[in-house]
Length: 241
Image (cartoon, rainbow, N blue to C red; front, top):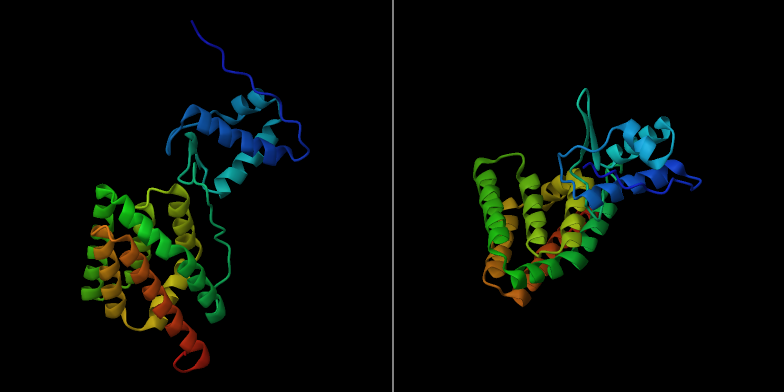
Protein backbone atom coordinates (compact mmCIF):
# COMPACT_ATOMS: atom_id res chain seq x y z
CA UNK A 1 0.00 0.00 0.00
CA UNK A 2 1.37 3.37 -0.99
CA UNK A 3 1.07 6.08 1.62
CA UNK A 4 0.36 9.45 -0.02
CA UNK A 5 2.80 12.25 0.67
CA UNK A 6 1.74 14.56 3.46
CA UNK A 7 0.09 17.64 2.06
CA UNK A 8 1.52 20.95 3.23
CA UNK A 9 -0.39 24.20 3.44
CA UNK A 10 -0.04 26.37 0.35
CA UNK A 11 2.36 29.28 0.56
CA UNK A 12 0.41 32.51 1.10
CA UNK A 13 2.89 35.12 2.27
CA UNK A 14 3.65 38.09 0.07
CA UNK A 15 7.27 37.09 -0.49
CA UNK A 16 6.50 33.69 -1.95
CA UNK A 17 10.10 32.90 -2.85
CA UNK A 18 11.44 33.53 0.67
CA UNK A 19 8.60 31.61 2.31
CA UNK A 20 8.99 28.72 -0.09
CA UNK A 21 12.74 28.57 0.52
CA UNK A 22 11.98 28.28 4.24
CA UNK A 23 9.50 25.46 3.57
CA UNK A 24 12.04 23.54 1.50
CA UNK A 25 14.64 23.82 4.28
CA UNK A 26 12.09 22.47 6.75
CA UNK A 27 11.19 19.66 4.35
CA UNK A 28 14.86 18.64 4.16
CA UNK A 29 15.07 18.58 7.96
CA UNK A 30 11.80 16.66 8.39
CA UNK A 31 12.93 13.98 5.95
CA UNK A 32 16.34 13.78 7.57
CA UNK A 33 18.08 14.26 4.23
CA UNK A 34 21.85 14.41 4.37
CA UNK A 35 24.40 16.21 2.21
CA UNK A 36 24.43 14.69 -1.28
CA UNK A 37 20.93 13.20 -1.10
CA UNK A 38 18.36 14.26 -3.68
CA UNK A 39 15.19 16.23 -3.09
CA UNK A 40 11.97 16.38 -5.07
CA UNK A 41 11.88 17.80 -8.58
CA UNK A 42 10.83 21.37 -9.22
CA UNK A 43 7.43 20.26 -10.54
CA UNK A 44 6.80 17.97 -7.58
CA UNK A 45 7.59 20.79 -5.17
CA UNK A 46 5.36 23.17 -7.13
CA UNK A 47 2.47 20.73 -6.78
CA UNK A 48 3.18 20.11 -3.10
CA UNK A 49 3.23 23.80 -2.20
CA UNK A 50 0.61 24.88 -4.75
CA UNK A 51 2.76 27.52 -6.40
CA UNK A 52 4.02 28.13 -9.90
CA UNK A 53 7.12 26.37 -11.21
CA UNK A 54 9.06 29.66 -11.74
CA UNK A 55 8.47 30.56 -8.09
CA UNK A 56 9.90 27.22 -7.00
CA UNK A 57 12.95 27.72 -9.22
CA UNK A 58 13.54 31.18 -7.71
CA UNK A 59 13.34 29.80 -4.17
CA UNK A 60 15.66 26.91 -4.96
CA UNK A 61 18.18 29.23 -6.57
CA UNK A 62 18.21 31.24 -3.34
CA UNK A 63 19.08 28.09 -1.47
CA UNK A 64 21.69 27.19 -4.05
CA UNK A 65 23.35 30.57 -3.47
CA UNK A 66 23.57 29.74 0.24
CA UNK A 67 25.07 26.32 -0.42
CA UNK A 68 21.99 24.58 0.99
CA UNK A 69 21.15 23.00 -2.37
CA UNK A 70 23.16 21.94 -5.39
CA UNK A 71 21.84 21.72 -8.94
CA UNK A 72 23.43 18.95 -11.03
CA UNK A 73 22.72 19.28 -14.71
CA UNK A 74 20.81 16.28 -16.03
CA UNK A 75 20.69 14.68 -12.60
CA UNK A 76 18.56 16.66 -10.20
CA UNK A 77 18.68 18.78 -7.07
CA UNK A 78 20.70 17.67 -4.07
CA UNK A 79 21.25 18.71 -0.47
CA UNK A 80 24.28 21.00 -0.32
CA UNK A 81 27.12 21.25 2.21
CA UNK A 82 25.56 24.15 4.13
CA UNK A 83 22.27 22.40 4.88
CA UNK A 84 21.75 22.25 8.63
CA UNK A 85 24.27 24.94 9.42
CA UNK A 86 23.13 27.55 11.94
CA UNK A 87 25.55 30.29 10.82
CA UNK A 88 26.13 31.06 7.15
CA UNK A 89 28.75 33.24 5.51
CA UNK A 90 28.38 36.25 3.25
CA UNK A 91 31.31 35.61 0.93
CA UNK A 92 30.86 38.85 -1.02
CA UNK A 93 32.68 41.07 1.49
CA UNK A 94 35.44 43.29 0.08
CA UNK A 95 39.05 42.81 1.26
CA UNK A 96 39.67 44.14 4.77
CA UNK A 97 42.01 46.99 5.63
CA UNK A 98 44.24 46.93 8.73
CA UNK A 99 41.53 48.47 10.93
CA UNK A 100 39.09 45.76 9.90
CA UNK A 101 41.72 43.08 10.50
CA UNK A 102 42.07 44.37 14.05
CA UNK A 103 38.27 44.22 14.47
CA UNK A 104 38.25 40.66 13.18
CA UNK A 105 40.95 39.65 15.64
CA UNK A 106 39.24 41.46 18.51
CA UNK A 107 36.06 39.50 17.75
CA UNK A 108 38.04 36.27 17.77
CA UNK A 109 39.66 37.37 21.04
CA UNK A 110 36.21 37.47 22.62
CA UNK A 111 35.10 34.09 21.22
CA UNK A 112 38.05 31.75 20.93
CA UNK A 113 39.47 31.60 24.48
CA UNK A 114 36.11 30.22 25.60
CA UNK A 115 36.15 27.79 22.68
CA UNK A 116 39.56 26.49 23.75
CA UNK A 117 38.31 26.02 27.31
CA UNK A 118 35.21 24.13 26.17
CA UNK A 119 37.29 21.91 23.87
CA UNK A 120 39.54 20.99 26.80
CA UNK A 121 36.56 20.18 29.00
CA UNK A 122 34.78 18.16 26.29
CA UNK A 123 37.96 16.15 25.66
CA UNK A 124 36.42 14.33 22.69
CA UNK A 125 39.09 11.87 21.52
CA UNK A 126 38.19 11.72 17.79
CA UNK A 127 37.85 15.50 17.63
CA UNK A 128 41.17 15.99 19.40
CA UNK A 129 42.78 13.58 16.95
CA UNK A 130 41.72 15.88 14.11
CA UNK A 131 43.17 18.85 16.01
CA UNK A 132 46.50 17.02 16.39
CA UNK A 133 46.53 15.99 12.73
CA UNK A 134 45.85 19.55 11.63
CA UNK A 135 48.65 20.86 13.85
CA UNK A 136 51.01 18.25 12.35
CA UNK A 137 50.04 19.44 8.87
CA UNK A 138 50.80 23.02 9.93
CA UNK A 139 54.25 21.93 11.06
CA UNK A 140 54.88 20.24 7.71
CA UNK A 141 53.84 23.45 5.93
CA UNK A 142 56.18 25.44 8.16
CA UNK A 143 59.14 23.14 7.49
CA UNK A 144 58.62 23.05 3.72
CA UNK A 145 57.66 26.70 3.31
CA UNK A 146 54.26 25.75 1.89
CA UNK A 147 52.15 28.73 0.85
CA UNK A 148 48.97 27.29 2.38
CA UNK A 149 50.18 27.51 5.99
CA UNK A 150 47.68 30.30 6.68
CA UNK A 151 44.86 28.03 5.51
CA UNK A 152 45.98 25.11 7.68
CA UNK A 153 46.31 27.48 10.65
CA UNK A 154 42.69 28.53 10.21
CA UNK A 155 41.68 24.88 9.86
CA UNK A 156 43.29 24.31 13.26
CA UNK A 157 41.14 26.98 14.87
CA UNK A 158 38.09 25.46 13.15
CA UNK A 159 39.00 21.99 14.42
CA UNK A 160 39.33 23.31 17.97
CA UNK A 161 35.86 24.85 17.68
CA UNK A 162 34.43 21.56 16.42
CA UNK A 163 36.08 19.81 19.36
CA UNK A 164 33.76 21.70 21.71
CA UNK A 165 30.82 19.65 20.44
CA UNK A 166 28.87 22.90 20.05
CA UNK A 167 27.53 23.21 16.49
CA UNK A 168 26.98 26.97 16.71
CA UNK A 169 30.59 27.60 17.71
CA UNK A 170 31.78 25.25 14.97
CA UNK A 171 29.65 27.02 12.37
CA UNK A 172 30.81 30.41 13.63
CA UNK A 173 34.48 29.55 13.13
CA UNK A 174 33.72 27.97 9.75
CA UNK A 175 32.00 31.19 8.73
CA UNK A 176 34.91 33.35 9.85
CA UNK A 177 37.24 31.16 7.82
CA UNK A 178 35.05 31.33 4.74
CA UNK A 179 34.42 35.07 4.87
CA UNK A 180 37.88 36.17 6.00
CA UNK A 181 40.13 33.55 4.42
CA UNK A 182 42.22 36.07 2.51
CA UNK A 183 42.30 38.27 5.60
CA UNK A 184 43.78 35.40 7.60
CA UNK A 185 46.54 35.09 5.02
CA UNK A 186 47.24 38.79 5.39
CA UNK A 187 47.30 38.46 9.19
CA UNK A 188 49.97 35.75 9.00
CA UNK A 189 52.03 37.86 6.58
CA UNK A 190 51.84 40.90 8.85
CA UNK A 191 52.60 38.79 11.90
CA UNK A 192 55.92 37.89 10.29
CA UNK A 193 56.94 35.01 12.60
CA UNK A 194 55.24 31.76 11.57
CA UNK A 195 57.47 29.70 13.88
CA UNK A 196 56.39 31.66 16.96
CA UNK A 197 52.80 31.41 15.75
CA UNK A 198 53.14 27.63 15.47
CA UNK A 199 54.74 27.32 18.91
CA UNK A 200 51.78 29.15 20.43
CA UNK A 201 49.40 26.83 18.59
CA UNK A 202 51.34 23.83 19.92
CA UNK A 203 51.03 25.11 23.49
CA UNK A 204 47.26 25.64 23.09
CA UNK A 205 46.72 22.15 21.67
CA UNK A 206 48.81 20.55 24.43
CA UNK A 207 46.70 22.25 27.09
CA UNK A 208 43.46 21.20 25.39
CA UNK A 209 44.71 17.61 25.12
CA UNK A 210 45.63 17.68 28.82
CA UNK A 211 42.09 18.76 29.71
CA UNK A 212 43.35 22.03 31.19
CA UNK A 213 40.44 24.32 30.38
CA UNK A 214 41.72 27.40 32.23
CA UNK A 215 45.20 27.00 30.79
CA UNK A 216 43.86 26.55 27.25
CA UNK A 217 41.66 29.62 27.63
CA UNK A 218 44.53 31.76 28.85
CA UNK A 219 46.93 30.49 26.18
CA UNK A 220 44.43 31.21 23.39
CA UNK A 221 43.80 34.68 24.81
CA UNK A 222 47.52 35.43 24.98
CA UNK A 223 48.03 34.08 21.44
CA UNK A 224 45.32 36.25 19.88
CA UNK A 225 46.23 39.28 22.02
CA UNK A 226 49.81 39.06 20.72
CA UNK A 227 48.58 38.90 17.13
CA UNK A 228 46.32 41.93 17.69
CA UNK A 229 49.26 43.87 19.12
CA UNK A 230 51.45 43.04 16.13
CA UNK A 231 48.76 43.95 13.58
CA UNK A 232 48.06 47.21 15.41
CA UNK A 233 51.75 48.08 15.22
CA UNK A 234 51.62 47.89 11.42
CA UNK A 235 48.91 50.53 11.49
CA UNK A 236 51.05 52.93 13.51
CA UNK A 237 54.34 52.01 11.88
CA UNK A 238 55.96 50.99 15.16
CA UNK A 239 55.55 48.93 18.29
CA UNK A 240 52.10 48.99 19.78
CA UNK A 241 51.80 49.75 23.48
